[in-house]
Image (cartoon, rainbow over all chains, first blue to last red; front, side, top):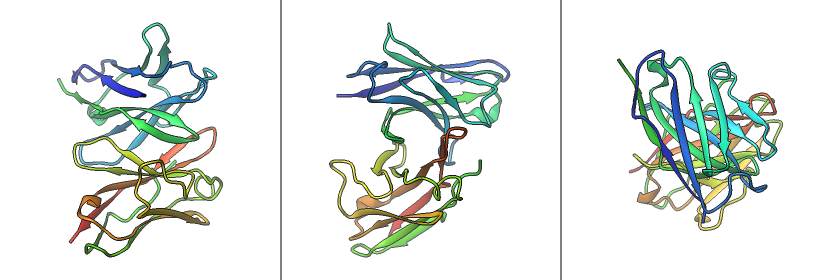
Amino acid sequence: QLQLQELGPGLVKPSETLSLTCNVSGVSVNNNVYYWGWVRQPPGQGLEWIAALYYSGNTYYSPSLKSRVTIAADTSKNQISLTLTSVTAADTAVYYCASLRVRTFHLWGPGTMVTVSS
Amino acid sequence: QSALTQPASVSGSPGQSITISCSGTNSDIGSYNLVSWYQQHPGKAPKVIIYDVTKRPSGVSDRFSGSKSGNTASLTISGLQAEDEADYYCCSYAGSRVLYVFGTGTKVTVL
């Protein structure tokens, strides 16, 4: 049974780099059925798609975040990672890892709250 | 790419039917039959309830149904129940450059 669990630092200082990981269990991250994505939700606001990693290895990013974000897979740890550079208070949000199937966010992790503050 | 437009709130009495609209453009909803809907209870992760415009995942109540006309998608909840009180988000595939666009979200209140 596929399960996802995000891990993050909780608090990040402005201008620093945010690193998140998503532990994937129940399926290999390099399977050819699911692919992977990150979505975030600022407090009291809506959902925003950040990035996607296809099983082909192709990566896709939101145009508004493309210059600062990287998604990658670590097959040895069965994890998906997200790196966001030069963070500001506007990056404060709950960050969700999700599996994608047929262009649908099929299953979501519980999310991890990240606050950007000095 | 702008977010898809949804009404901020919709309410109804138990047993009634309500419909949530999701307005996009011919670059997203209008071009692809790849609209999904997500239900989010407070403090919880979203859960998919409709995908590919009209399909329901296994285990999702048939009280939830989806449709699309032109650049607008809709989610209908029939036989409204207290447990349906939540936030609902639409999402559309938007092509190889943007990939995914979410809606602004709708808070459903059961009166």
